[in-house]
Structures are given as C-alpha cells and as structure tokens.
Length: 490
Picture 1: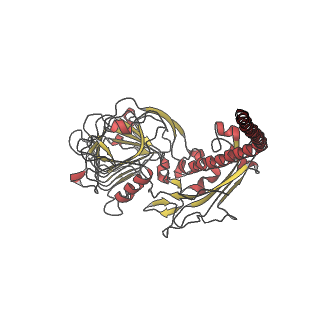
Picture 2 (picture 1 turned 180 degrees about the vertical axis):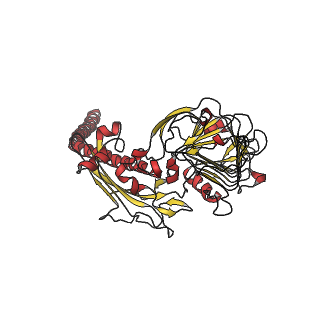
Picture 3 (picture 1 turned 45 degrees about the horizontal axis):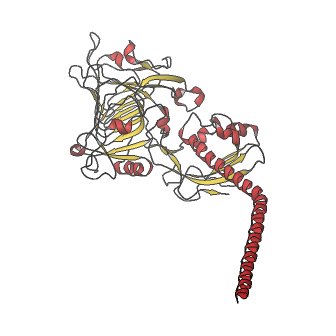
C-alpha cells in the first residue's frame, strides 16, 4: 500500500516538473520573439521619432512666421507691404478687413497671396537667413522649405498659412502644417500722446509736462507751454537721438505735429509778443469742432473681452490694489509692482486690462487710481481709472528704430537709436488722468481720457513714439493668432 502511494506521488511530481519545463520553454520562445520583434521594429520607432521632429519643426515655423506680423525688425523686407494692414480708412486707421469684414488676403491654395520656396535662392534667404529664419538649436536640426499664405477657409478669419519644414542630417524628412489665422480687433495708435482734455494750465508752473519725440500730439483742449521754444519745430535736419528736450535751447524733431482743439498759450512769451503767438506750420490750432482732433477710440467692452481671452484681467480697488478676475469678495489684493514689473528688457507683461472698481464702464465714481512705481515695465496697459507715474530707478536701455523718413514704412529709412533710462515700453491707455510725480521716460505712446498733469516741479513725461503702433503692431500682444481647432498636418 505504501509502494502504491509512492508511485502516485512520483507521478504527480513528474507532471509538475513537465509542466514547469513546458512553461519555461514557452517563456523562452516568447522572450526570443519579443527580442526579434523589438529588433525588427527599431527602424519603425526611429521613423516615428523623425516624423514627430519634422512636425514639431513645422509647428515651430508657424510660430516663427507669425512674428512677422508683430515685429517689424524680423519681417522680411519683401513682405512688409503685404503683411501690414492694408484696409481701413483715415478715420479708424489701417485694418486687415474692409467694411464688409472681408480679409485683405483673398488668394487660394493654388494661387496664394504669398509663396516662398527654398528652391529659389532669394526665397531661401528669407526662409532660412537671419533674422527671419530659424535661430539657435532649431537651425541645427531643420530648415524651412516652403511657405504659403492665402485667404481664410472660414469667414471672419484672417488667412490660411501652410508651412513646410524638413529635418537635416541623417534621412531628411519634411512635414507641412496648415493653420488658420485670426486677428484681434485692436485699433492702431497713431499719435505719441492723445488727451481728451487740454495739456497744462495758465497757473504758475502749470505748463504741459509732456515732451514728445518722433510723433504727434493730439490735444482735444488747449495747450499751455512755458516758452515758445518748448514747442518742437519740425525740420528734416533735426538729429535723431535719445537726447531729451530740456537740454536744448529749441526743441526740434523730424516728425512731430501738434493737433490742438483750442489755443496755444505761452506763459513766458518773448518781449513784445502775445501769450498767443503765431506758431510754426507743424502746429494746428482751433481744430475743434471742425475738422476735429481725431483721437483713436478703444471700446471698453471690446477691449475687456479681448483681454479676458488673450491677455490678463485685473480689477482695481479703492486702495489701488489689483485683484484677479476670480478673486472672492474681501480677498487681499496685490500691489501693482508685484504684478506689473518687468525685471528685464523683453519681459513683456502682454495685454493687461485693469478694470474699474465695480467692473462697469468707467465714470467718475468708479475709477480708482493705479500707482506705477516700478523701475521698468513693458506692456499694453489699459487702465480704466487714473494713473500716477513715479518710477523708482534709472530704467532700462535697448535699441529701437525711429519712424521712416517722409512717413514711409521702409525699414532702410528707419534710424537705429539706443534709448536709455526708459521706464515704460509699450502703450499706456488711461481712462482718466495721468499724474506725473517723478520724471518718466516712455517708448511707445500714451492716451488719456482726461489729461496729463505734473505735481512736482521738473516731473516731466518724455515720450519717444513707437511708429509700429500706427500699423497696429503691439509688442508682446498676439494681434495675429492661431485660430483654435484649425491646426492640422497635411
């Protein structure tokens, strides 16, 4: 009986051993099969990786080419007249769309508005040469081979863009990305300073604190200056530099025009002359009511909606603190310097909309006061309230381009200048009054729904106008953008 049990036990153990050996054999076969398949699939994985790199290159190229719409320094000279706003009218300024909201780009894929092919030496220089082509690490892994721009496939959009990029080294691979472009409806700013009131008062030390280089002054009211020499004379011989007017006996400039709704008053006229002297030809008086001082208009609701979608939105409280859109009632706000300071040149805050205290259209009772005391700020800053300028520090230095000669947009006629001590770069749009407490230098433009006034002797606002604003080019703001849901690989 014990013998039979032992035999059965051995048989049972033999089945287990056999099963174990078969399992090991199966696993070995599976392992070898996996290794074989992995070896066979390695080229496929490498090909997928190359395709991904090619697609990412093409996508990066779309971002690169979109800067041609935003930064005139990178826009190829051959395309500047094509890519700028060519519609609109003298009243509203240039636009990408006509009165019926049809885009200025009307070509087709077969007959595009713009076609660049790297097979052509001139086109290749645009697509792959500095500053319009790839830079840095991207130049080491790829190149642009083709670019097409034509009419939009959807009504209301700006254009269709097709970009082809290819990898370099190893097995070159090309991919084409197509995307629809939209455009923000941000009106251009055509003057260095625009005020809905006057500039300066006839009281002691009440002269205008504004000094303007390279652009126009548009003043709905009257202008008061201390000396006639403070009114810049327009002459083609004027030097194009960063030199402020206070260091000159006579202010002179190549581009400045004065459009004044009322009178020009000189507080200290030359002996024997009236306080209302006959000005030079670049000073245009009594423009109101006809033909009127043409101030650029930005609609409150439209710009608020644009900022909520494409920029940053804050609400201003009575203490001058900023609150985010989703901040709860009673939540502690932030100081403007915490949210708006630019630490370095190029650290652009983008489109920033600072709303009224109650989030309703601006009126006297709901406009707060925003104090800008940062050393440096880059932004398109829209403040539905009042602003106090009291920068702390010496500002920043950077190279800029003057306007074109004789009103042209040709880059070759724009003079490079290095501006120093600049506290604000961009656009300062203020619904109320701008008060200057410390000397402030600005490159860009200022628009005030009230006026610009100084409370301290010698506290002036010196502006060098950025001519790109007249074409609706706002640094740091995606005026032209990729329409959501339109990106695809062809």
